[in-house]
Length: 249
Figure 1 (cartoon, rainbow, N blue to C red):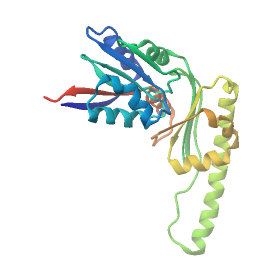
Figure 2 (figure 1 turned 45 degrees about the horizontal axis):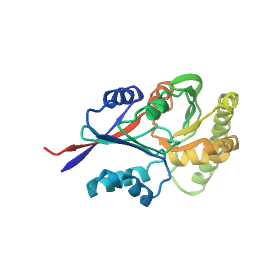
Figure 3 (figure 1 turned 135 degrees about the vertical axis):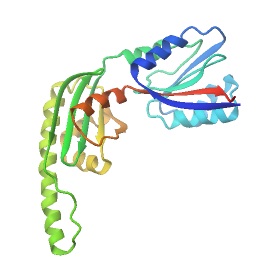
């Protein structure tokens, strides 16, 4: 019986893991499963591995729920699935642990924009790989919700909406000044913060609609959009999820 262990590891540790498994001493296989595959397609691709039903089901669910696909390395020594940070472009089936396509993905110097917004705080960064090229971090006054009720509450809510509108307008201008010089080279745009705030901000900041096709489904959980958070967030963006199956002791 096998049990699965899940962990999230940063880019350098993932590259080290790929180095460690690159030359397996026993029979092994690699499958690069691109995003968007259907359940029957995945089942057909993994059927020759003779997996336990429970493992096959778990792999299928993990890949179908991944917006970036998954890389399956399967053999007598290592049995693992890696969920990459960015979408796989090519479906590959090969003997041995074919780590090079995954390694190449992690070594690309992709241009990525991070837009982190919470009410009253924001952090914007454009990165080449994990290197910060430009950024803007700041704050703006937006009062918390008023709970007294009545006409006083309605006046307060109108005032608060004006504060939010002004805050979003300033943040949008900073987003534009940071992203526009890199617009043609950008590979991905990633947001972080509270969901409703981001939805309201993206609705008001029409400039961002030009990047809808580059926007990843990943939403970073950010409590304090500050400069240190930008640096931590890009490491998280480049991290992979690694699932390993080991025999239960």
